[in-house]
Amino acid sequence: MNFIGENEFLLKYNCRELYESKNFFNSKLTWRDLMDICADYDARMEELDFTRNEFVKVIQDFKGVHSVRSRLKDREHLIEKIIRKVAKNGVRIDKDSYIDRITDLIGIRIIHISRFQSYELFEQICNKYKEKFIEKVSIKIREGDDAKLYDELVKRGATIDKVERYRSMHYIVKSDCGVCAEFQTRTLFEEGWSEVDHDSVYKPSSNNELKVVYSSILSRLAGACDDIAELMLKSNIGNEPVKTHDGKAVTNENLPQIIKNLK
Figure 1 (tube, rainbow, N blue to C red):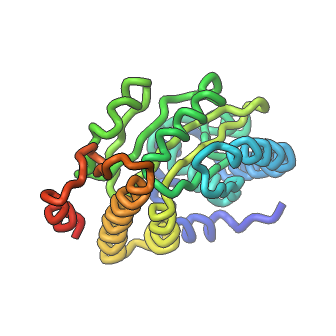
Figure 2 (figure 1 turned 45 degrees about the vertical axis):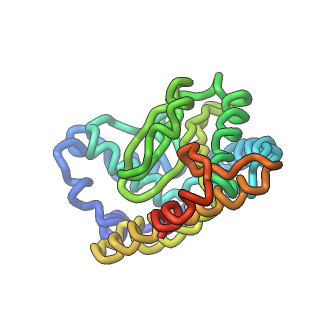
């Protein structure tokens, strides 16, 4: 097993302060323990990859799915996440417990075109996997988004989490082999934003405040694109009147104001 050295790792992921924090020290977790986790993770790769592919086979046949992306968590990112969780929560995570405590070893990204398709995906995912959920479905929305749009899903057990820049729906599912997978559903426009944000802002080595501002603006633009796409797609459904995302019918009288709001 090849892995970068301790000092190189702490510098690369900007986590020396966390690694030397009181919580991490009290956990008695050592670099050797972290390398033992890596070795165990490597030994599970074949089984994890099989489980990932089984999830993808089912999900890609769901109605409303545009495409599915999946991955197994990178070893370095696994160690980084463990360090951050231990430093934050003071809970020891070792070779015997990381499988239960790290809930995104398998990541499944489910892309759909229109925002309203997230509701039918919610139905299908719940019908197939609800008995294997280990926590409530989390609906991530930006500050300023209308949470009332998700009232029906909240009534069915989902939670609303307001985050800084992005929108997505998260499901944590425990597989038959005991490993957790994180499903995320999001639109094509949000996926485009997330790819830019991941490479420019999310990576620990990128700590540029201006990039954070740019990313927030790009996220708002992606949201506006979703609104426009939804209007366009809804106009193709039979002879029903076109409605905005909040359920209001689009008429000749209110169309100018709607366009103004979008701008």
